[in-house]
Length: 150
Image (cartoon, rainbow, N blue to C red; front, side, top):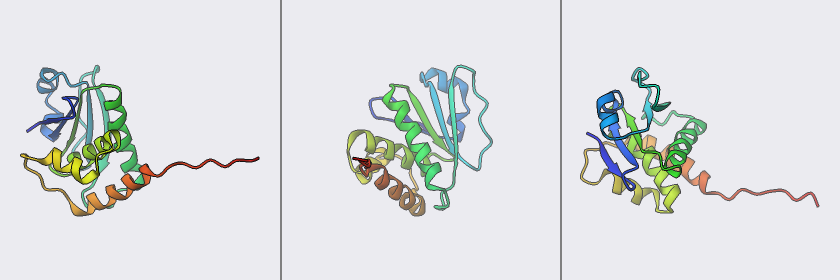
């Protein structure tokens, strides 16, 4: 089941949704961010943006991979690109990564953003994944410092 949020630019779905060309075109989706490490890469049309970040629910993902996935979703939304974020069942990795991108875009807390995305939808968020993403989220909020050589 695809769930829509963030002004209809962001949709959350599962592996079946990410591979259903008719549904992607019918919903005017321009980009698919595939987070399912345990699924084969999708074979999509040449005109669709396809980004794959093979994430696991067990918290074993590198911070760099998590940050890249979050930055990708955030960048697509910043550029007004209608995006489907999908994982195997659409209930853990996709809502967590999508809510993190929205949190960074809007300034809403990660918890509130996640609650809004999973409201009225089936979900089963992995605590290990959420913990590792929360650490990356906090680091992405840190101001960068520059050194002044004088």
